Image (cartoon, rainbow, N blue to C red; front, top):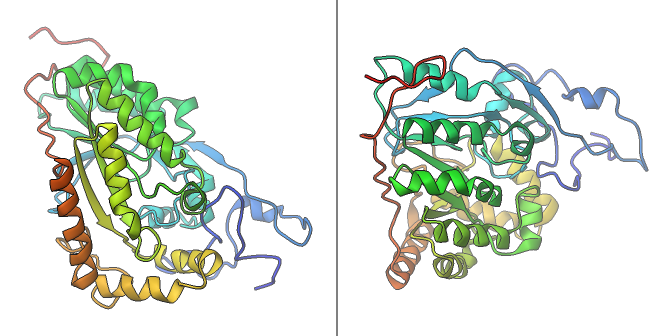
Length: 362
């Protein structure tokens, strides 16, 4: 690979390259992404990729799962791909399903589903539909930058408020506070809760690790803002990266507890499929001095592999390092009076709409 190409650090991007998936027969192509076709030489380097958004109009929007690791059985993803660019994101491999790279394509070639709320309304209008908490943000962030324009997440929350339907939100963005008015109303009847991800308090590290996420202090401020608005706030320290962020556990828990978080949890680093080589590449670029140590501890927690996909293990790891982190978290939870999230969201207030947007009287 020529020096002028990959890998290199793109300002504002997380992935060092556009590695293609080898799981779906795509390895024959050297490069991917339309922007590469018009690549010009700028001081011997490829120009930084720009973000593009394509609209898609699926026939349904609600996804159901039976995973024993997840506390919900249904979810919504208003977007595919995520501009936040978190190098560790376990959702990156989903872009490979569409012949796009889990690397730079995942964070530059985005998809939006403008009809999400309308499709959800149609599903909820069906007599066979039984309400239960919906999770949003489980694949890609519902408050990534393009939400400012598309407002897909807000339209879904408006529908939740209208129908009195429970919804749980997972995000690492302080932009969630822009919907504090809707969240506060939903929270009055125990219809919502927000899980904010805080990976590090180090702004310089965050710019490398999750380059287009709001700064760590902004997320801590969001915890405080939502808590003061009466919204249940859970903080997920995820992922915990050995020899990179694990030393921050005590500082993070202290900061979010003071900000008003009601519960906290942690998840060790996961490196499924194409995330593993992308993360290894990122380590060599940013932390070559400790790359070997990081991956040695990672493999110790994952049964000798970069990743352990087994149910029951993928969210907590194993071995001495995982046990040490878990014991530290348990001590911190006791110290600050926090508990693991137990969102008992209500489903008994649901008012079924009709498919055209009117509420049913009977």
